[in-house]
Amino acid sequence: MTDPTGDDDFAALFEASIKAKRFKEGQTLEGRIVGIGPDVAFIDVGGKGEATIDVDELKDEDGDIDVAIGDRIRAVVVSVAGGLQLSRRLARGAATSRQLEDAFRTGLPVEGKVEQEIKGGYEVRIARQRGFCPYSQIDVHRGEPATHVGKVYAFRITEYKDGGRNLVVSRRALLEEEARAKAAEVKKSIVPGAVLTGRVASVREFGAFVDLGGGVHGLLHVSEMSWSRVSDPSHLMKPGDEITVKVLRVDPMKDDGQKIALGLKQLADDPWASVSGHYHVGQVQMGRVTRVAEFGAFVELEPGIEALAHASTFAPTGRSDEWTRHVAPGASAAFEIVSIDVEKKRIGVALVPEGSSRAAIARGETIDERHDPSTTQGLGSLADKLRGALKPRA
Image 1: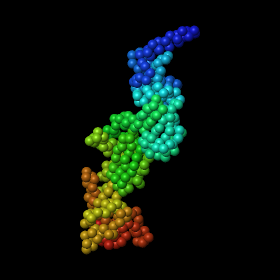
Image 2 (image 1 turned 180 degrees about the vertical axis):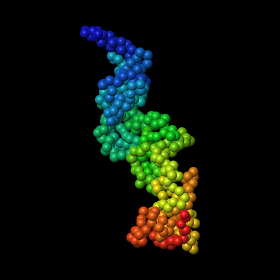
Image 3 (image 1 turned 90 degrees about the horizontal axis):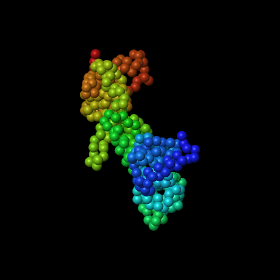
């Protein structure tokens, strides 16, 4: 029971004061969070020592508490009167000149308000002092300068002169420190086979760079985006999109960094796994020409399944490459499967003459419908040139 006279409360405060004498203001401590209340959190600083810190000190810019019970934090002693009080930053209205000097020497963040834009940067109000933050030190990314005016941020004092009358501060130093700490945590989870959520940072013709957190980027190569051929990655994603990817490889680099290869198509079923059950030699299948090379035309039979119609399967026209002038990427026609190698993921096909009934059936037409010129689709004049050149296989 608590003594109604308040003697027990006084004794507790007295005991806390004696324990706090082991520490001094401005001293940097590391402790473990043992409790979080509505207003203060309790920190175990070793032995029987326990300190408090305002819960507001543990919140991020969105107002969410960014630590949990059991986490270890570093903080600075701001008071030993009536118990040990810690701070991870100095509030802009409560800091004294002495505390600002201690913050400069210990690296303790201080809270400041960006008052106005001035030549070369910003004027920042910290306690009763004015500080200067260069443009390059307000953020890690360039943006509109006016967006920072009126905002309250945590800063690190990088220069302290004339008794605090000349302060230079940096917000970027704290942001980069936080990013490094977060990057170290993120890297622990980046191992081959891991499935992670990231955000597209940029899209190039060869692929996309994905931010996995803490500024750690991986490359999602265009060949790993889809089982289908991707001609333009920007058609699939854009900067800012949130995507889930799989870590394929993590290769160390000379500068102690990591080269991270990512995959997206690996999170979907490989269409080649069911090829044996869907296709067989002699089958006639509609296909779409995706690209043309000197040795033949690549034909997509379904998303992720691409076959090759070798140049030798086309009708001779005098010149060996004449046929390529009549084959346009994107055109559709009926093709007969002439070979299947599931292990090497290869299918060979040959163009079926446009006038044959097998081509009409592959298009889902009836025999009568194929005589109607309005229903004729596909390679057009090429089919006319090749009609009869290929003997249908039974």
